[in-house]
Image (cartoon, rainbow, N blue to C red):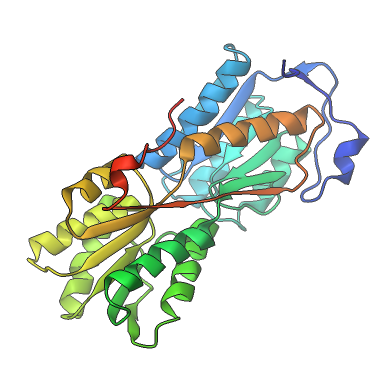
Length: 313
């Protein structure tokens, strides 16, 4: 049975990464805070559910509060301070800005709160649990290169500049850079990580660029929005790949349209692992490595029938 008494001893001082806060012996884990980029994205809803289920499996009385920062830095600062004030012992943080939040994380640590970064890195966090996002971008764009015959114009539809997005774009550029006949038209536009953002960005890009062979979007909501923009503009023959493996993308892949692949993550498992990592640190058992990378899996129109989707239990 997992220990619920919080014991942080001298062993934690040896843990790599951020300085770990001291906890009074005997303080029970009662309150967990979760702040994510946007609860309008099913990915983050699933991540929060994974963490909540893990907490309640340990103790049904643990209070878990999940809030949406809506990619607003000041809002996330306030959320962290509110968690500290409410007596949270553990915060799972999907950082809006991986560097700017360091002072807020330091305040949490000083108050005796463990902070685990989930999905993206955050300076000062006690541990990080995320997908190997470089690999996700790499496999998604390698598949896109194959699909367009290793030649033609490609758009990389960017997103909020958090570590996960930056890593995915870097992985994509690495894969596309292997083909001299592939030309990246644009990689700077921010689709905001949302369907509406992907729609708006792609509408503009389609006006600017009359010849496009492929598009990589940094997540599935942007892919869905981009696909809609293409259909509205009656642009055909463009291939789209992305990252997430979300339920909506499964439907799109089965439909057999422009969206041909997504590098799948498992936000539910990430949320569970984020919670258990934080709990273990509180119990005096930090992970051997401060960063845990979860491997992505490429889901395509060809193998989607065997894809079980995001874990939900």
